[in-house]
Image (cartoon, rainbow, N blue to C red):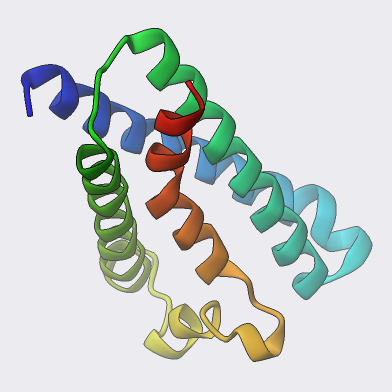
Length: 132
């Protein structure tokens, strides 16, 4: 792995954090008042999964970063663990959310599909690498 891999991996993850904040704002201000909390969560999760896939594909295609399947999966794993770490550390200690509230988004049986977003984050570099 070279410095380009590190720069793209870290840079795209920070871009995702900015896009996630924008997505959350749209969810709370646009979707939630119209369709309620659960449907707003589902809509914004699906939108964000699409954003992750498109952004990953575009950046990998135009960065000319050559990656093996392992490196693409490793990039996704870095994004996944960074996202989970940020979500729980910042979510609890900075934003004051309870652990119960943070864990609630992982309950697929209650219609919460955040876990699918995390799966998308993990697999997006691998998928994009295969498509280009």
